[in-house]
Length: 252
Image 1: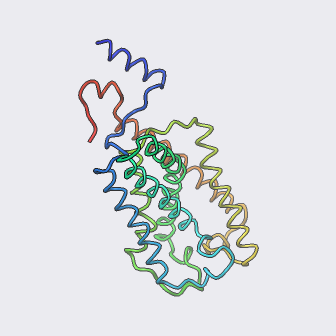
Image 2 (image 1 turned 120 degrees about the vertical axis):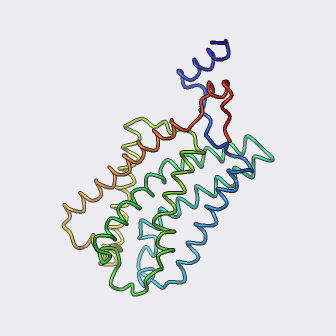
Image 3 (image 1 turned 90 degrees about the vertical axis):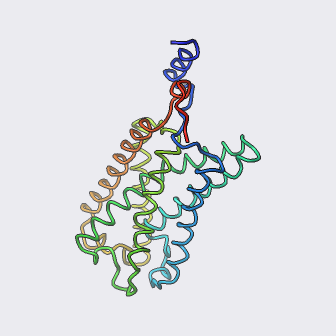
């Protein structure tokens, strides 16, 4: 082993050297193109949703009663920061890296959340679509739009953090607090809107007892934490360490 390899190995063991993602990011190449497509997709989803009337949007909380919309907002923010970081890499590396770190911080929270949304939504929809659609909402959104808000964000963020993000390094306690904290936050928010509106945006929440709802939200936290563990493992698999780079394994 050469001196450089020994130094790289020591840096890795002491966590002083960051891993390099499989696809270099931020940059104005593949990273920029991917984030631009994702950003346009999320922006388009917001635009097309406005074309389908939802009377619940006039109630307290509006469309932000829905966990789906909150997740889409987070995905939009993550890709906006990533896109800005890609563009800024042409002018200021320090500013670009700052935006990139902010994007990674948002992704740590939003990606598991989008996984929760995708798993719960499609599971309930396959079982009984009426559990998700309030009777006051008559308009049925097309399948392509349904997938663009309940599937695409999870897939887009998943690929982004696995192939272009720095490996997550939250401790077990931090990861548990983050995922169950988000679940608890939505619990309080959706119950606040329900106390004002006298209905839940998702009908199934009003059809079950408080104890069952607690179980649902705990289950959501568990799904989020499991998603975090899986993603972190895949990041370690795809990321290139400094030692790999010394051996000539360059990222795209």
